[in-house]
Image (tube, rainbow, N blue to C red; front, side, top):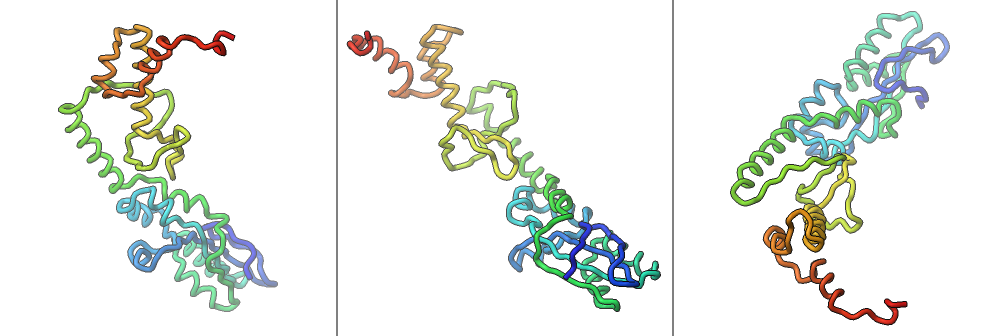
Length: 249
């Protein structure tokens, strides 16, 4: 079995006595046959992966179609056969796996390993996921265009600037029980829009209770709706309830 691989780059080295070798590791994705028939399973170089990126959003490429495994091969050559070594290295640079596999059958024969953990070519697998591509970029632009079209007629708009990156209002249907979650696969904090609204309502209620900034509870109701469990009611109930002995102690 082959033991030395140099992650996607042709690497000539000494193998058996009187021979040299070129190692090839190519990232590979595990996906159904109907997907592989359209986008392939092995990494094919930056140019070909860029074409795939134009049709598939980066989240899909990272989560569902990620090159998480690899195939590895070693092709051997007579030590002084520089022409064959250069040909093998050119196949590696071109990410031409099929042609390289055929070269492993030439004497002195090499070895092939399929579906092994990816090691030295992780950078290429990650790079295949980083581009937004036309598909995702077009969807975002269309989404923003719809928001800009609808918002002026139905909403009061205020611009704010955050001090840290976050995503909200993305349509995530699941509750965020601990306040926020990291949006997979991007690692950016995700806050449910309902949580952001609740935070703003709480701030507005406290300002109305303290009489700051011209806020009144009527303003809160107009902007956020009526809530019988609001902080405003709880504060008034506490003022109207005589303190107990425990509170005095």
